[in-house]
Image (cartoon, rainbow, N blue to C red; front, top):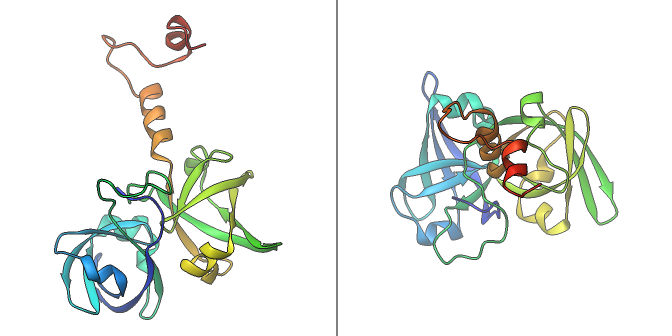
Length: 215
């Protein structure tokens, strides 16, 4: 589990590609002071497992499913990536619940200066659009952000100066791909509403909520 608060920006120093997979070597700084084999690290929001490390770098394996679903496949040497170690019990929870399991990708449509912030518009598919809630949370390349506006086939987020400095979000250009993880709570609600086919269990719908005093 992650929070979407980026610990530092790392750099890709080596990519070893298989037929549909990859091994990434990533340079980092502070994160390496407290790292172990098997640790989970979110790389651009993708939960990956540390397979080796030294004082300068760590490596992760990327399986075919992850390559196909995320922007990891577009990474090249010297590209910057957002890094966040997994949340520990007792850590401050400053963002929102992020699993590191990417739902799909979006495309940067525009970046517009808005006083001290930058408003970023991201095109997404219809399948992802239904999970985006105005003023709700969304993880973009692993960054916990608040939805500032929703359009027909896109949504907007507003980037404050600190986020622009501490993450890669404003290194993106129009047409670049970003990883999207929608709020996990909405996905669980949808599952309970539409996928309960066991007739022995009450369905979570308007009739159930009304009969139990919630409406």
